[in-house]
Image 1 (cartoon, helix red, strand yellow):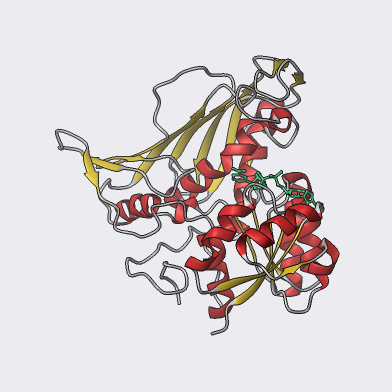
Image 2 (image 1 turned 30 degrees about the vertical axis):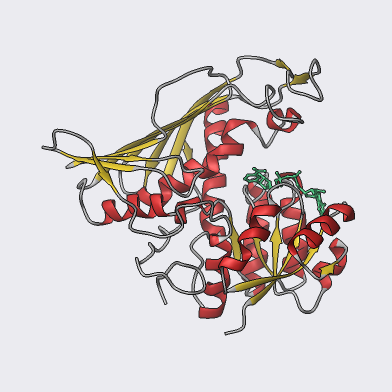
Length: 370
Ligand SMILES: NC(=O)c1ccc[n+]([C@@H]2O[C@H](COP(=O)([O-])OP(=O)(O)OC[C@H]3O[C@@H](n4cnc5c(N)ncnc54)[C@H](O)[C@@H]3O)[C@@H](O)[C@H]2O)c1
């Protein structure tokens, strides 16, 4: 089958890895690039050998492009996604799906009305490590999962990032910035959530930048920087998650899953690889489980490749719009619950994404529900 023709909107930092990895996948080809800053699009086109540099409007209207890869900043994710869908194009976006739940809902509804597909990053859960972890659960090696923990804690980004302001604005903070990786990984292993609750904090209302070139400037913090959340999954399992920009040091794991017959140690969900360990009820120690799947290196784009294959095969993409909306709702849910002092009942759900089979296919390196 002919590869799906993709046009990129947003040629900033993250676009490089998508452009670099594109040749690994045969289910899509990148035909054109656009950016509100045309110079950036021209630079990336030249570096990666893309023939067509278009304006954003031209790319959205272009008859050849079937799918828009939306790599713009979160604040314009919804605007670009809605414009592309209106023009009859499928959309795959970087995380998060959108800033508000309302925007996220509009994107899913418009796609449905138009018979188009929406997919969204992160796709790290399709990497070798997280597929291996998922396969251990599916094989029953830890029995029934009954709880989980997930921790993403650091001291923020004003000490190294060249322009760290956006991390502390509404729609960012540690949960909206990093939560998608951790929550998507949890849903991949535990299934959808039925309710969440949490408490949020803000250790510093003002933070001073020490990285160049803005050293000395101060940032007024407009979003919680400490979010301690609890998740009740539909399955009956529960999880605790902490995301923090207020923590200097810790010795907590990325993710662990605890089952009726053992425990599972899962590596960084912001990576495609990493070590997975399992320890059964009677085991004396943790056992390393080598990855039985491909994509253990930086395979960003595998979610897009799977979505392009899904379009060609008439199936649901793994990194689906439903999954990313569910994750967006959980992130809002923690903040809502903290403000109101109550649990937030989830209104959305999603199915666990189809696990990969071990055999690699030519187009995506994933194999599944054909
Ligand atoms: N940089 C990373 O390491 C990283 C990692 C994971 C995910 N992401 C996600 O990727 C997305 C982009 O991040 P980035 O780091 O590449 O940001 P960036 O600021 O480097 O690039 C964003 C690009 O979008 C363009 N843009 C902004 N508004 C636009 C509009 N209205 N129309 C067209 N183009 C527009 C900008 O000119 C810029 O070139 C974000 O959603 C981010 O969460 C980034």
